Every structure is written in structure tokens, then in C-alpha cells.
Image (tube, rainbow, N blue to C red):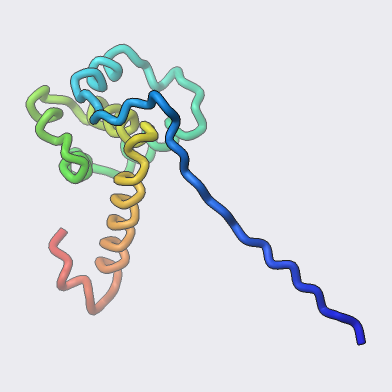
Length: 129
């Protein structure tokens, strides 16, 4: 009788923080300065360009500010009277920073759940957004 050898492939994931990495919060004024210095339209980055296009085409300023409010950065943008393009660029910089990956992932998950609730015949009456 032949033995049935099953190999089980396990996935192992580990995050290790490098020594010397700064764990302080991002300085929002530094990020705004980076926005004014950078021209994202000339940057050939496979991740940044689609993000910018998605935000430009699928989100209103109000929705973008709601995302910023979730991240706790809306006041800074409002006080600097940023336009839609500046808000988008600020969001892309914030979301692409590795230190923010956890909150970005959580926000994306929650936004997905909100959309699922809004598209459900029964549950949509309970979603106020």
C-alpha cells in the first residue's frame, strides 16, 4: 500500500524593525513641503500613479477629507487651504510611508465594509455615510 505524503506549505510572516528607525510621528509640515517640491505626474512609480488616479477620479474633496480625518491629518490640510490635488498628493505620501501601513490597511478594510453595507438591501438603511 502506497503512502500518501502530503506536504503542507505553511506561510511564515515576520516584521522586524531596523535599529535606528525613527518611531516618531510624521511631521505634517515636512510632508506638505515634500508635496510642494515633488511633481508626481513625472514620477514613474507603479504604485503612486494608480493611487493618484483613483483618488482624482473616484473621490470628492469631502470624501478625501473624511479619509484624512480618519488618519488625524484633516486639520492640517484645512488650515493650509489645500486644493484637491494637494490633498491627494498628501494622502499618497502619507499612505506610502511604511510607518503608516497598519492604519492605512485598517482604513481600507473599514471603507470596504462600509461599501458592502451600503450595497446590501437591508443594511444600507443603517449606514449614514
